[in-house]
Image 1 (spheres, rainbow, N blue to C red):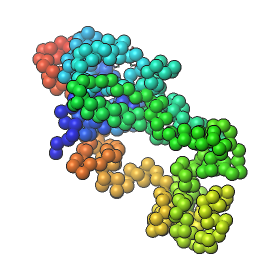
Image 2 (image 1 turned 90 degrees about the vertical axis):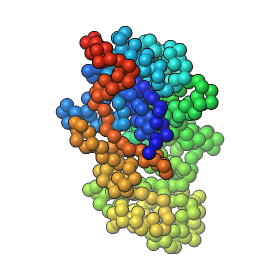
Image 3 (image 1 turned 180 degrees about the vertical axis):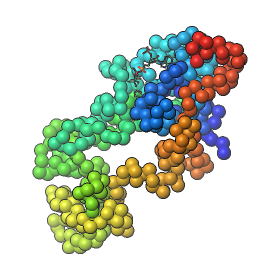
Image 4 (image 1 turned 45 degrees about the vertical axis):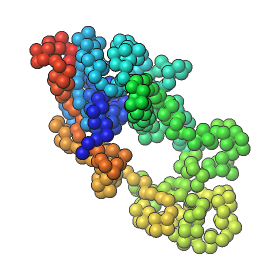
Length: 416
Ligand code: COA
């Protein structure tokens, strides 16, 4: 099967999560991704949170599948020379070093563009170029705070809260992948490469778009009717944290199911979508609510929405989260069980679709990872193991025209 990105060569100068998530996606879709790593140590995640001594950590293996690994000290003149050769024949260079690191290495955008005017240079930074914080190094949670996610996540009586989802890291990587593919299409028309830059702050904010919507609504009318603070609580002048309220206009909440006293995930998310009110009443056996003026409209329900959720919890008390969803789905009610990582890892549907995949690895044995969440009718992205440190150094150097003796010499000076 020919993959759409076959023939696209990518220098993967990324580390940790944001950059690697981007290049991994492109590798799944067929790009030849060469991860350039410092000799001896490599990407810091190879060693982070190891669960097996002497084997690459899952943090690394789950973000670097389908890639090649080339060790190269790009601060040494001999290493720079190799990198220059690679740049001349690559389509894309992706990096997420701290601000200014690539310039300090001698590979500014101008230099890269001079070496290969057709190459796309894609970068992740914490803040966008010219931003008053653009000198800052940034990790996931920093970005969640800077991008508006933390101030709007959690409960109103608790502190700003970080999401477990990698809104700052992998999300930024996905934005960058879209930018790279767009620039590649642009290059087909113009013949020119360009610089693609994505900041973590911007990517988080992009996902918090509805909260900026709410800020403007709040400033205009002074309240937000879908938040738990309405109508009994107070609103200040900034979007508050809304707990588990739905953000899209239909009230929803995380509700207890059978066993919640001992199982911290025995919950479902229940949504009271306006037009689903009648089916909800049928499902939970409260037919009298259908025409009751105190319940009939969304506006009438809102002031006592938590009393309604409490009543639904009484109905849920003798049902597991799975049993509850099996009943509610027959009534077309938007809902889902709160699933744990253990349940997701063993979910037969996710295994069948290739979203959860088991990958054989030379040193680890097999490990689970998340495969492509994007499905195609003509291609099933296959996930292969992440490379060992420097596994493809000889192969890549030979491909660049280096002889065995020259490779030996590069090793002697510890440039590879
Ligand atoms: N050979 C030689 N040197 C190399 C190298 C190689 N193959 N690969 C990297 N380096 C050097 C760089 O040149 C740089 O050196 P310098 O600072 O002396 O110029 C250094 O290694 C890497 O620095 P940096 O990227 O700043 O690493 P860090 O561990 O201090 O910071 C981050 C890590 C993630 C905070 C930082 O890279 C960052 O802010 N990145 C942008 C935002 C981002 O992507 N963050 C999320 C990551 S999930």
